Image 1 (spheres, rainbow, N blue to C red):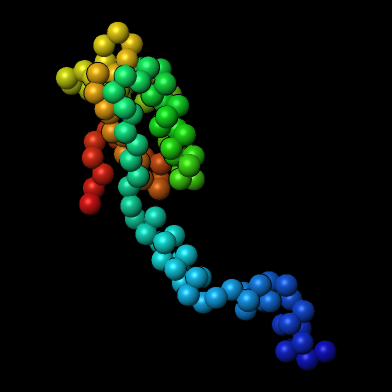
Image 2: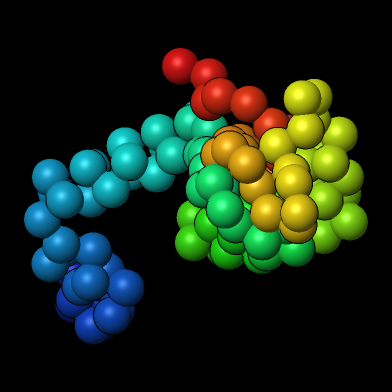
Length: 112
C-alpha cells in the first residue's frame, strides 16, 4: 500500500482536505481572539438578588468558561459594592460582571 492511498483512507485526513481553508483559518482566528477577550454579563435592574449567581454562571457556560468563583463569592461581590445596588432583595441598578477565559471574575467594565 502506497503512502498516498493510506492518506486517502484515513478519515481524519479526508476530513481536513474537505474543509475549506478560509473557514478553518477564520475559525482559528476567532478562537484565538476569544482567548484574549473579556466577556461580560450585565444583571439587569430588578433582578432578584439570589438569581445573580445563576445569571453569571450561565453566561460562563455559554462561552465555555469555567468561572472560578462559586455562588457565595459572587453574592459577596455583589453585596460588597458601594454604593450598594441592592434594596428589598432586588437590584436597584444593573451590575456588570466581567470574566476572562481563565475564569477569573470581577465587577466592572470589560477592558478594551
